[in-house]
Length: 262
Image 1 (tube, rainbow, N blue to C red):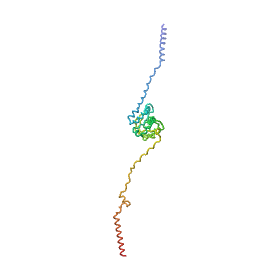
Image 2 (cartoon, one colour):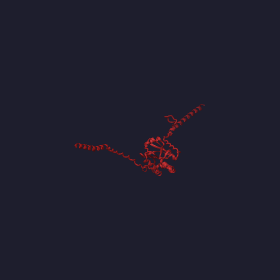
Image 3 (cartoon, helix red, strand yellow):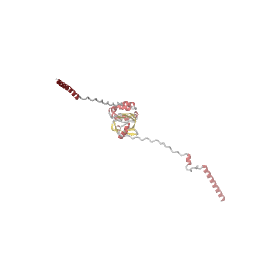
Image 4 (tube, one colour):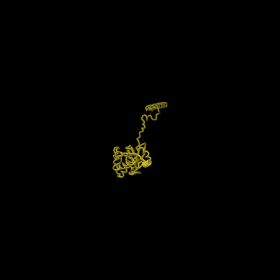
């Protein structure tokens, strides 16, 4: 009887422990802890070209053309919504005053828009970039290639621009932080595609005045002493007259003696 009880208890313990052990074996491992994703990089600050051009310069004339032709929207989108950035060459107000009155007033609205687009490159360039850029001239502008291209040269760190009709240089940097570069130029850029290729020759510079000293004119003493031996004064006129008188008296005396003997 006791032996039977022992067998029953052993069997019960065996069956009760087996599911627990099996459950422990088949239990799934704990899920790994997810690593936090890095925070997105902050977007570059919005560049407002109108604000930049309003406080610098003055660039009122160029800004008015930007707004009237709607080119400001094109430049603004390039500056803030692309990876290329933009480079703008901005003439001061005096540059527009120095143009002939008919230069811009006779242009159509489309030509005027192309002229303003001609003042920008669809890429950000720092001043140091122009040294390499000059080797690849001509460079296409926002207006296009060919007659709308610009030539660049770097002369001792100064950037020079040549559109055919306009030869100027970058006189100052208004703003140069990627993705926007704005540089001041001294002239309005006039493209050959609008104004033609029959460009009048540049007038030669006026010759410099002759500042060399003039030769000294001879003095009266120099004229009087010309031909005389160095170190001797010219003969006196009274000395010459006295000499002639003595010789004439000798001749008369000899002639008188000859008359007496004859």
